[in-house]
Length: 261
Image 1 (cartoon, helix red, strand yellow):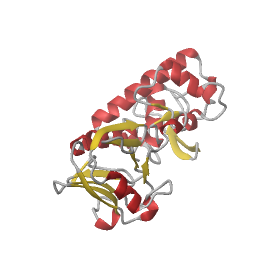
Image 2 (cartoon, one colour; image 1 turned 135 degrees about the horizontal axis):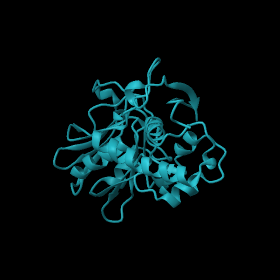
Image 3 (tube, rainbow, N blue to C red; image 1 turned 90 degrees about the vertical axis):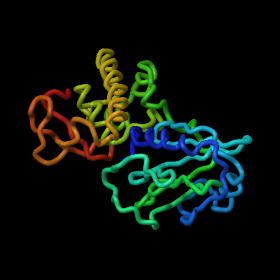
Image 4 (cartoon, rainbow, N blue to C red; image 1 turned 45 degrees about the vertical axis):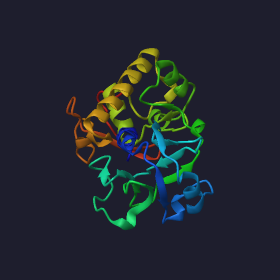
């Protein structure tokens, strides 16, 4: 958390910050600035400009700036929230505190009209970049085609879930979204990613695109049908079988041993 659905909500919220002159930058946490930049460099790069577009690739929020200025990249880790003029992009983040302590404000773009765009991150797992390398990310999970998904999984012996969460192959899928997608598609997360049949690949593509769109509409990656059952003794919402649990791709994974094959 946050995953693609949350960052898409942040992208929509960031549109309210466009075309507003930047008066300054507040960057009290130097560790949060990545790629060798510091507070003075970010301030010099952004002050006097405006944000012109809000884009997203996977979990990375990209804010273009005026006058051939740099792209401001924002990552949110597990607990980062985007806040614009005091309004948060999502109401709830799983595994994050709901306390709005000012000490957790890691970075802010201040506007001449008195408002701001702020990153609030209790665990400091996110980061701020100038001109991030977008090419390091795979195809966005919201728009991926069947051919691109087939290419991302082809010939891989890694577990299917691990490959889906490999941001260099497929951008935007995190732990909760992967479990929800595979549960809907009826696929075992431990299977070799390159071993799916053509019919299974088509089914996975359909449910991946559908799950992403559905969870965006519902308000977050925590809102899937499987989510309430992801606990000890939890049962499959589809067929009532007790869920299995293991670590797959380094993440706690839940699946139904009855219908996920």
